[in-house]
Image (cartoon, rainbow, N blue to C red; front, side):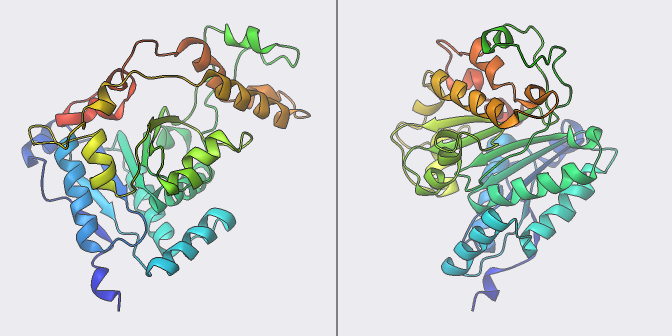
Length: 315
């Protein structure tokens, strides 16, 4: 019954990007989107065309085909809890790997929504095990309403001072914090989106020992899970088109860093690393960001890297 919703596995956007712009300005970039649950081919087409209009790039959609509401929920549970590699995961992995191995491609932007966030987390883990750093460092990751339980991002280089006796305050003062293979990961969440409360928000706020790399932007008081209607309309409206009321409020809102939560996550990671040689070197740069990237009096537009791609621009 759901076969008519399938369509081709790989879909290209057909709106929002002028071919000559893609050929001249962004020829070495590839933008790839993976959809979430219960999404047929027509909705996938709407999603990638919308992303293309906002960011001025051709967007490739990898269709995570639907098996119906209950089938997709079961698929999510198996992927999230057992690292199950479904057909959608395997297809996404093959496509992303081929793009990363293309020597003419210098940047690969991966965008996932809902279950697409789970798929991204799984294929990134697998790619880290098989591809060299120079390929993986091409990646940037952006998710909306992600249901993923983790996001990995290994260190590119360790801190020069990995003493086990170093205190947190001393580490905060480091001038050159350790860097990571994927330089930019951002997660966007509506505060009352139930999928986020099970995914991104739970895994970053409640499960302190969980590995969830990247910055998290939360739209306070907002609900809804649909990509175009509840996320892009309010967070990244189409330039030049009429946007919903209060659509600019998110981008113009002042960022507030949850220092206490960030430090708790750092402490939990350190405790988990005890007993391993140079264990503290594996701790993410959250402690550095807490000390230096407080974003005082900065708005979301100043901090979000994804926003800087709007209208075909580059950060």
